[in-house]
Image (cartoon, rainbow over all chains, first blue to last red; front, top):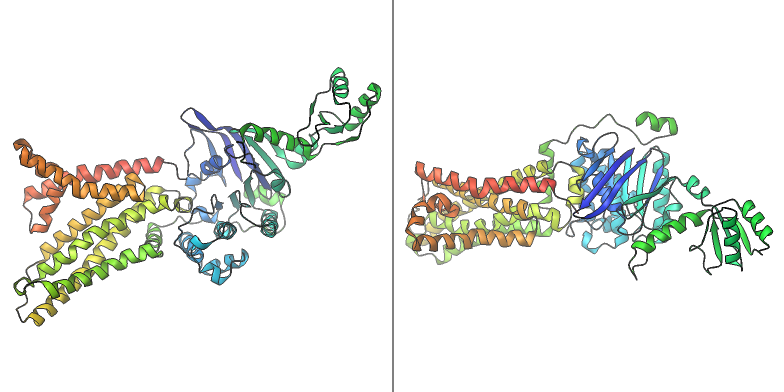
Length: 303
Length: 269
């Protein structure tokens, strides 16, 4: 269980994290979603005590992180797979953590097996690791103490498609065994596949959160028509809000806050022909996410 | 939390232990000792102490005039490289957590930075004392072999008190490096600061003392390397101990305290 309450972090005049409140529950994978620079990593760093908060609080397993007697046994953390001494071997990185937690040395081999790092790879210095290998090593380090909470920042970065699939299975299984899994990503599709709950953050503020199913259901209707303006006027006249969809190419689609049935009725009465009419499902969430991304994204730095 | 989890998920769960025992300081120190040796750079810095002790002893054997083949010659020949390397070891043990970014895992495994720093300090002092004992043993060996080769009598012109003072002096030098590491938290910056501190500052004070009468009298109370230098020249008077205490407080203890406070509040990225 991770409880974050009214967390705020200011750097001078800039508010990196603005009144963020959410809970990640046991037995569920919570996806922490937001564009680059939205405050995800800062929030996670505050949760594990690496960055002091300006105000608000964060608790893991019912305690402030700093009050956990041996945090590695309760919380597995992977914030940046590249943050390892380049001159240490992969095995040594795990051994240092294993010793600090006071675990039997056999755990190191178990974890190397689990993340499919061969003995020869584990004997290489981290300097010579690919990003994917570093991620595997980082995940191994996080799982070393068999913690009941996992906090992972962009764990899929650098993994190949097979690796991403493997990681999803691993995290799913871990959550199914009762653990709390919180992972961040800037890619909606990546997190949509695995998360049970979503927390969406943009410019330091939470813009949406809840069970994934609810967020998808609340997304309204997507309608495609050659007479876009006519339909949007008709909808407005009926008091139904709509907007041109950014999630669908072509610019001839509207996202409507209403059921497909109602939209169909309005279109029929207005005499507007439709090409497509369906529940928006992920489109609403994607739309919101694209808007967030568009505002904060710099040119060329595609998500 | 535990009840919540079991209600939601009655099937096999991630094992929940009773709250684990806190990590003892001895374990943190043992891990920090391991970390100071498990990289190539760390290993060679430590090995360098032994290698340089052997080289320095050999150099004395080869090049020193016969009448200077005394224990003091060996001790000072070994002491110089050590006085340079030990502070570097102390600096890097602290700054690598930031420069190599290992702090991210170190400070999440032990979320009490003061304890990590304390453990690192204990390890650094331990390394200093052990390596000086090794160096003294190498020097003693040289002082047995050397006179035998040269055909002169062995001269043991350093007593236990002198050696203790040398250990204290080198430990203070190492702690100075340690302090700068904690305060600056950047390898290059801390090493540069150390050389400013140990080479430039004494020169400035020396020039000042030569030029200004008023400063000459207070120099022993202000100039830390002047006060520490006395440790290399045999027994200290009570006043010299007092001067050592005052300058060490001002130049080592206080900045270290400030460094620890700042470091505990800082952000680890």
